[in-house]
Length: 144
Image 1 (spheres, rainbow, N blue to C red):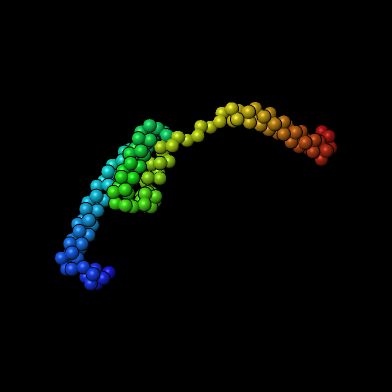
Image 2: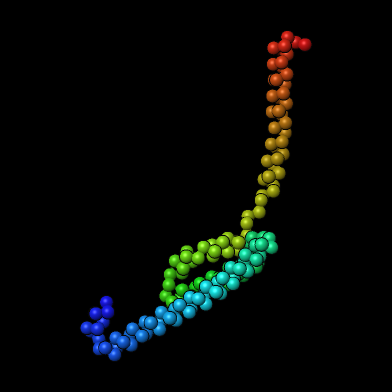
């Protein structure tokens, strides 16, 4: 690739292109470090909230997730990266996203109805089994 550039352009333009590419690579490295540092701060804050047993779906997680999404989209746009690929390379973002969505509450009405039907049914079946066992003992033992 370098030979192709040398054959079509003069040496000063090629040298400027190489310097520009190197400068862009250096800027990318510093921007990536800054991005990773900011993201690590957000993820540490989320881990701290999780250690303090803040429930999933809390406002704190939602704010941190929104800020992480903003950082990712800004970085991806600035450096012309695929945002989905960027997020896939950072597994802690998935954890933060799952913490930011509230868990579905248990449907207590359904649970109560199940209990009202299941408890009498289990008691009836246990009584039936106990009666059958007693009848079996009477038949085998001879009626004492």
